[in-house]
View 1 (cartoon, rainbow, N blue to C red):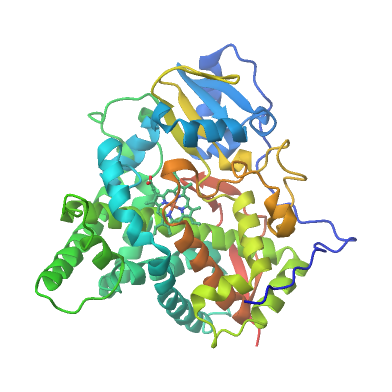
View 2: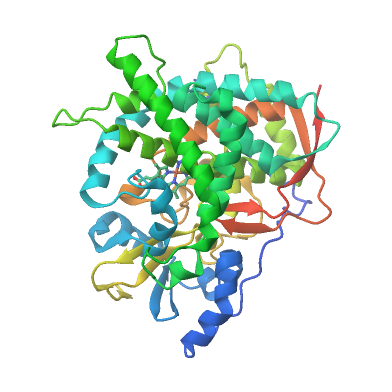
Length: 475
Ligand code: HEM
């Protein structure tokens, strides 16, 4: 492959880089009066945790605080993150608040399984995400995006809510690669159910922060239950039908569902039907809204940086899409890929990674008591003043050439780290490269909101107004 020449002069010298509007960190509060501080911060934690972060999260390597009497260590020192998540993952277990939120809907799926169940599942599922499988999904990614673009050509007269549009596109790609559209006759209902269940089940309830047992009903979550039940039934029906066809020796598509049903472990046991169902629901929850948010923020950033947009367009226009398998497109789109990576630095879809310490930790100045919550916030880490130059600015060139090599592996964590690093990372990057290539070749996206989109953390980082944009055909 001929290396694509990298232009190192963005933005032009006389142009200020774009700095999106985001919450200003709260002044660092004094460490006494823990309960008072908790009461001040709790409404923000429930409505938008990004607004609860205080200034020291963006300047200090480690910040110690508490919610009620639950101590919290916010760790933003790359070496300490590496120690905890790579060298000593045995010191950590899943964060109980996150488990209270996600375990009921996702059960024993990979994201929420723990201990031996997680280890067995991860080993069985890792080969499903092998590069050759992800490469083979590129055709479906291209086909679904082209189909979406064809429908978009008829709707360009209206301002479109791009966050919702990208969610529909990412779900369409995922459903095609998960079960080859076997749920598609119900797809609108499925998408509505997925959106509904993510909205109502994925937010912490005040009781979650108090570590109240599951016997206390979370009224905030009841509304999502019906949608989740319907979604589970659809997934189960599809999985059962597929299993029957596999058992009968019928021809079946090479999608995630077939791959999951065909897993076999050392003991000749694969995933059970329940585990396949839990993981399909998990992939839907973890694998489409994340990518969709990253795409929407990328389009927003490009809409505010004319030079970067033109560079992406030039790169994409030069791509010989008909001669090149779509899994290889990304190799020819270094600047576009850098824009996507820079977008995930500024707006990391998964903006909080939480664990609980299972024993006391005392290592190189890192002191954490047993049972304390350990948090890494990619949002704050990616804007940390000691780790990034001009952290608030959109500067995609950080992710190219020598500059890219100088980024500490543990300073940029959109996909997490250590043994629980995102299993869908390659899938998401490939999907984004293909989607951006097709979208930006066909359209210009211009922001059309009355005020800038305000980032709100509801599991993923969402724009408060779903990102209204004017979409204009380029040809
Ligand atoms: C831009 C898109 C994505 C982002 C930013 C993202 C981010 C993350 C992060 C940060 C984690 C680690 C969470 C933790 O340690 O607590 C994670 C885990 C996970 N992700 Fe992704 N993800 C993306 C796309 C996907 C896709 C497309 C899939 C599946 C098709 C997926 C499936 C998963 C699963 C199953 C886990 C749990 C892994 C484990 O615990 O073993 N993700 N993701």
